[in-house]
Length: 608
Image (tube, rainbow, N blue to C red; front, side, top):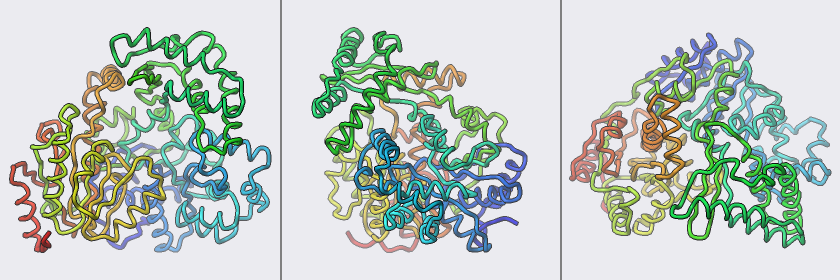
């Protein structure tokens, strides 16, 4: 019996389910590349859960962003309801996102985890103590709330005055399906504690990687870090505020000396691990310990939400990493000096993939399949490409070759031109549109010239709750613009149901900035993947982000939408060949063609 929550399968779903089932049953991994709207999550969970229940295996459903957990929750709830099952599942997010203690939940990054650890160890967190006093028996109301996701669980735990993170971990211990972020498995500093906490293991499990095109980039970031002279100066101020006589002048002096020798006539340069003074390298452990202790003292005395002391300690810990896939770079901007530790390729993913009984990698943009088999080091994995499920006539694709966001071409005039074009496109479309930019800098520079009053905007460092609020408000609108960035939480893994988006504008190509890091990654990939560095490390990741964002509009067989790729580079062969699913028009008069599309679709364009 296939555990599929709907009565009718979409085109290709039956084939996807069968292919995944065959691969899992044989203990093989499978790479699934299928266009947005096929229903990959339903197909993958249906196949995986059917096999897992037959063979007594656990399932990990992993996503790059918290906002992408919801669809997996909806699928599992639908399966339980349709088949009268009670498949247990848990929606796992980081401890900081589930901290019910108002005195600590606003503390940032590493500082939060150390403060939480100290409070728990000393018996000073009332929420953790209240959870322990439950003796393992969670109120039924909390268990029920967990079926609606981590935000609902948080609300109920806050009401009861108990630690939501501990409650969630307890629920996870008895779950058949664990929904979590990539970081829980791919971040070396989190993985072991996460596995112990939930009492599960990857070995023998089925692991579903949603939006799998993100794996390499995110896993590399988890092992990368940087510090700056300004961060050291902030740390020195923190030490002064708590009356500490710890001196960080030696570290600041070492970095400034290194910059002087390496950056005489340039802005960035490679450095070696041994360029850090010997006295620092030999005493790293003791320095880390002192900085961590002083960081905690600073937070407790000042009630600060962030401490540079702990960030520096974490940097020193990672500085000792070695291997061909790591580079160290020193750079300067004005008087600010930055020392970076960069992972070019995440070697640890190979071990993680091999632990699982089978991996299911799925995305709308795993092309070419041969590239991802190489990137994941899974040359024996099955690799399947599936067609688009909806009629080509439902979508019209245009390329605006008069625009470019190349760095050297950015100017006020160009931003005004982009804004004017966006306004013209919006005036030609009867409903909501989304506009996705290559960066927040381009978004913000363009937004100031947009005249449309009804605009919903993605901001830097938006949390999951704030993102949900923006989406909730936008979904109530029928004639607005949503502005976001490619690769962000609004442009990937998010559903816009009910033909909410009548148009999507992709502004520019989100290529990495030319830098030593970019060059080093291309060179490393050249060596590892037989001369394919430029394609694998530079062009493909950028195009993937654009195609992902463009796929947000068509979600069902009745949806109709216009897609505009606004950059002349999309006419180049390397980019043009990735635009699939409809005929592409690249003439200068495309605005009139947009109106013609909606006229043929028998939708009246309201006067603007």
